[in-house]
Image (tube, rainbow, N blue to C red; front, side, top):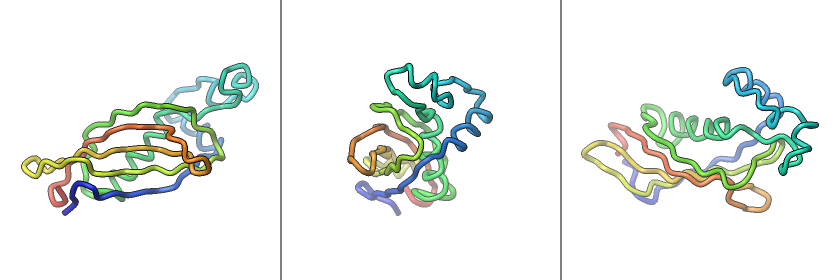
Length: 134
């Protein structure tokens, strides 16, 4: 059984090729994500990673690692505090903040930090259900 305070961390990064593939999968071809010349004219100065692609890290962890296989990912609320860029390593942190054993659910803090500077990039909260772990 998982309890309040149980935590999990994973490091990740994305390449521009992965971002370009996500453009194709999602249909979001906003040039801010793939066009260096366009992105240079924005406050970000270079292409940024789609928020939904970042959230896919949460989905992977919830379904495969923490709580893991058998989980049902019910909800995600995310605040993107800073842009994320290709080629930069990030750390995603997860922590169980509450559980409801009757419903077999948990509220899980989901955060992304830039690994090198330790800056909070994404702050959020997820809900998951797992019949055996909560």
